[in-house]
Image 1 (cartoon, rainbow, N blue to C red):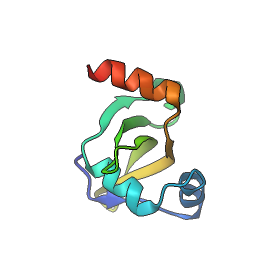
Image 2 (image 1 turned 90 degrees about the horizontal axis):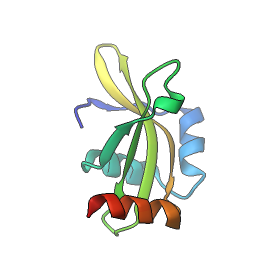
Image 3 (image 1 turned 135 degrees about the horizontal axis):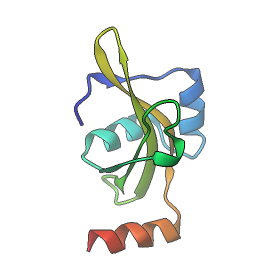
Length: 97
């Protein structure tokens, strides 16, 4: 992903970590070439994106994020991160085949 870094603060740190993923896991996942799609349902005020894929331990992960420009730098701002549910995994794997 073409970005200069990540945008973390108290708000998105707490929301992203509440489902068991660490900041490092989220950052590595987003930089590891997950499947990315627009999130049209939540893009009223800014473009939001969804990333799905597997981490290095083969766990299925879902991350909602946006890109923000601060001081001329493109930063990835994770908004929510969690492990995918069984039904989501089945849908993800069906699209991979």
